[in-house]
Amino acid sequence: GGLSIGLERAGFEILWANEIDKDAASTYRSSHPTTQLFEEDANQLLQRVLDSDSNLPGPGDVDLIVGGPPCQGFSGYNRHRKSEDPRNSLLETFLAFVDYLNPTHVLIENVPGILSMDQGNVMKSLLRVLQDFGYATRLGILQAGNYGLPQNRWRVFIWAALGDEYLPNFPVPTHEFPQRTVFGATEFRETIMKPPRTSANMPWRLEPQVTVKDAIGDLPQISNGARDDTVNYGSPPQSNYQVSLRGITSRVSDHIAAKLTGIQLERCQAVPQEPGAGWLNLPEHLKPANLVRHGDNRYPNRFGRLHWSGIFNTILTRAYPYWGRVFHPEQNRVISVRESARAQGFPDKVSFAGGISSKYMQVGNAVPPLLAEAIANQLSSAPTRRNPKGLGIHG
Image 1 (cartoon, one colour):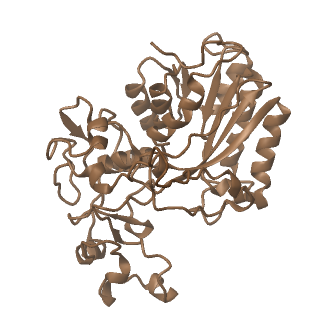
Image 2 (cartoon, rainbow, N blue to C red):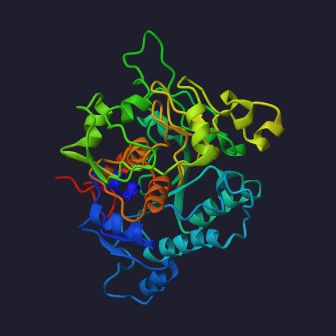
Image 3 (cartoon, rainbow, N blue to C red):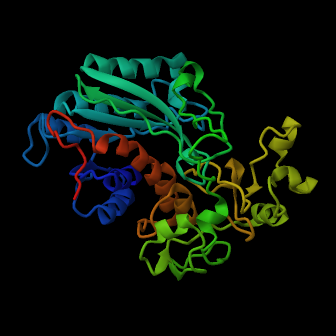
């Protein structure tokens, strides 16, 4: 529900939602108690909409349809991705909802890998279908770190506005951030949202980047494989970021971590506590053989340790050392579910349902709420024909 949290913070009322995963649905339901949540296959839900089910919206009832159709078929982490991947067909299901319900606005989220699918033709086809439905479109590639997140996370968004309705821009970056390169953007590079140029004569400056310490420095020390689901905070909040995510919560939940064993634990213990440390710093007998075979440093983040003054790698669906920098800055363990959620900008009041693997997966699959809020703010107060005072529900 990261995207929904951001929309609500921007003033939108989330009336309907669908989530087929049992644990994710339970998390969503507890975080959005007033939303009517359906828990079924999206194609079955679509058929009920088409059959005019009285519990579901009809044409003209919806101002905004938002979604991130499953992206496994597009993700750069999937080496066997194909445009025929059956999961990709859910893009077509999403578009069928749009075509029938005819909302004034649409927002779609996906991973940058969608841009290079079939030499860019998948994205071009998606935009063309929306345009054929009567929508003006705007494509944007956004770096979450530029909007106050402590994480390197590139994501692709599409705004669509029906007819001559207001077509939102994407928000101007507000924070400094070191990552400037997004892979796979190909011919769509001009849609990357870049920070404005600043100079001594400018009346404003970009905010400093949010660091790992800003994000998790107040959380208590835990052991490798810790399973105490709710614990006391380690200290009072030490940054504005921590203040905003802690809110009024008195204890912190989901501060649990996957357990390292065997050679994985040995590697963690051997990685130094210094900026940029990773598998290249390991003793020869602990270096992964397949990485050694490359004979270079193309993958320095693997088996990497975070540093307090640095940032998180993209939060994925597992805290798996081979995939990136997930060792805690000082403790010999991987980052906890809550630390992953902090990197994503989830408020501490959000508790994730299910087992630890499911919790990590829900966090990794989410849109960061702060990024969603920044995007939604571009539309929330904009007037439309159906709502002359703006789509957002303010009060």
